[in-house]
Image (cartoon, rainbow, N blue to C red; front, side):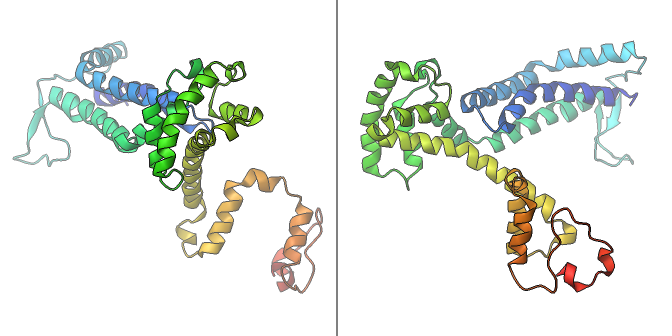
Length: 304
């Protein structure tokens, strides 16, 4: 911990994680603000690129000041060391300390984070989110664009045929003009409020295609979060010791784990009656609150 390399990596981690923290927190929220998420993705990637191009000197000076303050030895940046991952025996490729820290650690870490962001948010997915952001009702629908919304409808081919897309292109300008001049929509701050307000004042029947598009936009982040929770639950439930679990039993366990808030509201007595009625048993399941003594020697009745 008292080496220059450890201090350098620690300061680099602080800067990188500081840049990505807001984006990470935003994406983990259940009520994701898509417009803000899109803006943060672009900002993080631009800042990472800016740091790679111009952030080395500031970071290097910061690390040296920390080392001088805490009496940590700073190596001579002109000295040569073997390339990381190579053998230290005779014939090993040598590089300077400066090259090792600048190109072997600093550039590599930033490139890996930048590459990870590109993989997680490819152009097609980002474009989809940009299209959804056009429905954001804040600031009197400041992000509204007809062409992007029609493009969003074309992505959902099962819900919008070619005729629907043509009709939607004509309905959207009328819809946006009406909601901008309707005081009922002034209080809308997200897609959920917009959909509720449309139903309350009957606009969902006047503009059915627009309302269908809003519904699909609302489903998108929920479906994504549900899939992430399902995979997380699968890793917790189906471990190496339980890898022979059949699909039905896995599905039942995952359902109970994912929807545990719902299952927690069910009374224990109802659960006991449900399992008691599934098949005949040698003895009745114990009532709620009763003690089961000596389970290990009670016989097959309890275990059944």
